[in-house]
Length: 66
Image (tube, rainbow, N blue to C red; front, top):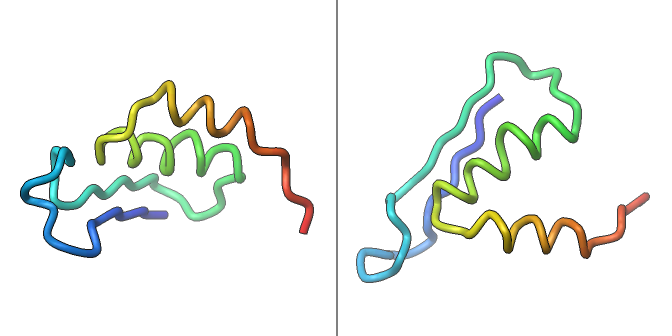
């Protein structure tokens, strides 16, 4: 499974340290918590988001059962 984050427009003047970030795990049968832990959160951090802000956001969102 692979996740890639890239800006939708030119970000050369912004605070993002990289033009694109790709994170990959060696299998596609990851559980949701593994996807967040090993793909989404590391990609957001590499893209320039603060870990504490990510954690605060994740803690404030109730689980969705849709």
